[in-house]
Length: 335
Image (cartoon, rainbow, N blue to C red; front, top):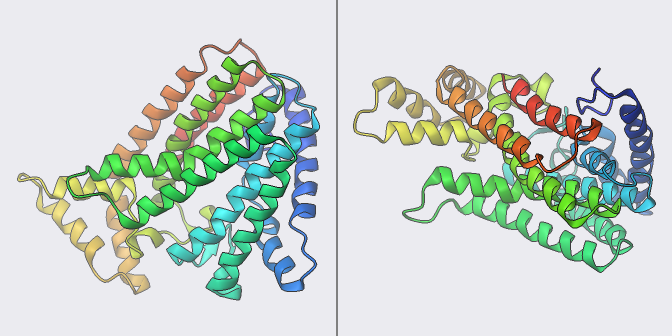
């Protein structure tokens, strides 16, 4: 079966435990974001109430099953990673001018940029307060993760340096901006469940690799699905000139001496004025039909397989099976 936790879990007992613990995590999330100030409270609850996959806290709870997953610290760690993720979404949506998030109006569309940014800061503060209760090592890991999140966003914003390969630059952006927090989520689960250091390192490495695969799969989904499926407007990144793997691969092909007229025609659509919905739709449909989308999917497949290989040191069992199934599901999502 597919668990209500959104992770593909075959073992019914494991699925039931995770579902029960996620209910507790959801309750704690709503408690932690509560503010005395009315505006701060409404804005802080906005994305929590919008729902979402809750991938990061679920991964924390899952890797904790390699040890003692019932520990209070595991639940607190799951809250920390989701709070951190939510905070980044408030900031990202302002920078990307994204009108939708999880099917609801983005916070900046409701309250303006300044309130959205400050709300993200408030959630970072609550995440910091929660992680402080987990000890100095957790604080250090959280700080290092936060630094990578910021660097990923910074490097995405300024683009590659002269002479730097744009595709390599983009993969590093994904590693910092997306994979770092997924890796920390997996690491925290095993760490606070009392697992051995080698087990913690194994799931952390899995998270780093699967996190990049996850974002490449999202690059495909953002082009091939509609807003009702993704909760985001297709082509927003194209309109805002935010790089994605399909666009970068197309740009590299069009720059080659033997580039086809078709490659150049699609690139011309991407580089045109995309301010109107009609122009954006035309560009999205043209890119969607190009084989660079399939090439992006293939890259996601390769990374998902590498992530599975990272799990080789783990003993056989329901947790390992679920981690493998999660990596495999990335391929299915992008198909």
